[in-house]
Length: 143
Length: 110
Image (cartoon, rainbow over all chains, first blue to last red):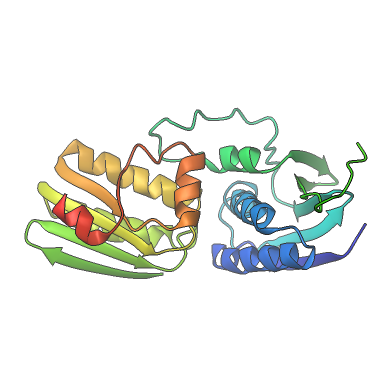
């Protein structure tokens, strides 16, 4: 695992802006590039909002841990909470052109990351979001 | 988030400044719905030129406002979309659902 950053916040939406700034700066420090940074910031904001809204049901006092790191040729963000099980992976995806009021966060997450993985273990939710990093100019793909 | 509401005859403009996310969407919702409830016709413009970030809760709020306007005879327009908000609306395939104008002035003139 390469360089990592970890922050812990309370499940209060007022911390979302701080989370976005941390992710943006982490992407910069990990040389992720602007396109990856923009996508990951939006995806993480939606995922953390989901934890606040669904896993903790609006309780603004519960802990959320967010880690950001380079993971091979991916940038990985891991979001952990101990709220009720809120499995993104098995949620039906909403047709985005419907004029319904809610439910677009999941669509944004799925659109913007290359991989996501939800783990429920020991009473905790752990969501991994991964986005492939751009190859440096002239780099040879090893895949 | 800073919210300013201005009235021009049968039109109103809600000018927003700051990020529109789950923390601030309730303010946005309140301000725009207040303006919509005050009128049975005319134009309501939401000026987003001071907004660099919107999330899905703000998108949901704008959709709710659009539906509210469409249920009456109010024209609902967005103006001054920056790159970030435009991208979120495009990704959610809603950019064409809204009447989007380059500027507040253009939205009022249209």
